[in-house]
Image 1 (spheres, rainbow over the protein chains, first blue to last red):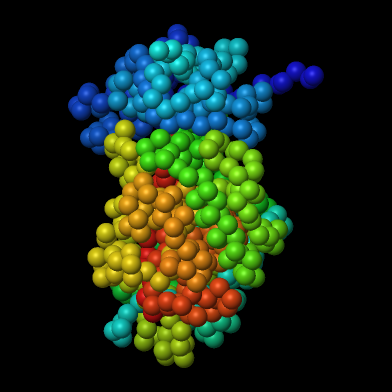
Image 2 (tube, rainbow over the protein chains, first blue to last red):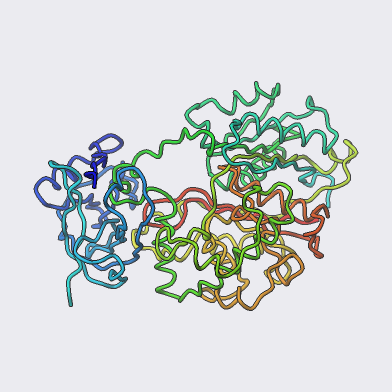
Length: 140
Length: 388
């Protein structure tokens, strides 16, 4: 069988808004999210201002990456960057910090993944240098 | 109907084609020429134009101005509608406002797109950086997530989704403009056996991107009569919301913008769900149809499956649904999409639906959905009530 060529594009930081801290965090195995200190709420994906106040007073904070699966699907159709990844477990995780993030489940067969399962942070290698935040289901 | 009532005084719609080899300009030209022919008006009287942002031409920031050149129009009011599947109903509402404000008298709402021939869209910002890496490359995965949450909260009978697909397919069989390859009857087992795309979303829950166009004449009742036009409908209520609950990071994604719009359009028109003659909800996916049946109060929230199974949704039934097949079975003409649902509603009220004509021509409810956002349901919701 021919070797699957990894064609996953590696996103560039700061192309649209300031996302450098997120991407630097991934290199250290840490999940950093945008935080609005005025309302003490996180927001994800990163925005050009606080969606809560409309002010550009924003910080970055490291989060634990623990939470609960809010929605889940199994992507079965090919597409750019999907080579060798199908079927792929895709989940929307509600983090304990009160914000949702899309990710993949790394440690479980896709058809065993379910809403309500607790998850913890894991990492999915996009290429040799870059990993993207993903999740492992925490067995009860 | 007062003398300065705003009316839709004509419509035109091209056939839906796949990989037509044609452009949005060409489909727009066909729809526009057909609209002039259908209404008998001269091109020179058109002084307002609203066009949608097409996936096939959006790399050109000046598409709307180019369209005026292509059609030989010199409008005093021009709108470039970027709310996806809400651009047609939204275009009618914006044209009505412009006419009331004196910026135009005779407007054409023109939608065309050819994404199955040419794709020029680039979903920037968060999509490429935070969604593509996890494999949510487009609407199907997002709707798989949405369906999973709906099923978790309310339960979901897949046979009800099959019935929506099958009922609409019956309409497409009678629709000359429906994409030819979709014109074969569906059975429940065809739906159940269609391949999984993003569990629990199946192939037959999804629209197919095609090419096509449509056009609507929006003016005052007095002006339409001056042109000798006899058939017209009034858009008596319109409401729209974008990024519903957009500053709530943990909003219930089964709650949609339509829950906010439904009370508004019913209050404005004085109608209720029981009064609606036919329902033409935006149908990119079957679950969106079911959620709208709930949001507009045809049944309780979460009871969509039971309602669909118990209700005749055919053109002769209790609530005729997307009687021309909708986008699910006629094909989605790119981002001219919302105009397909609107054209069928106007066609029904004009009494021109032939073998699929509904009995109640008093009113119709049409909706639009635009753009699929990050980890939510949809970006823009729009609803319009048309009355005879």
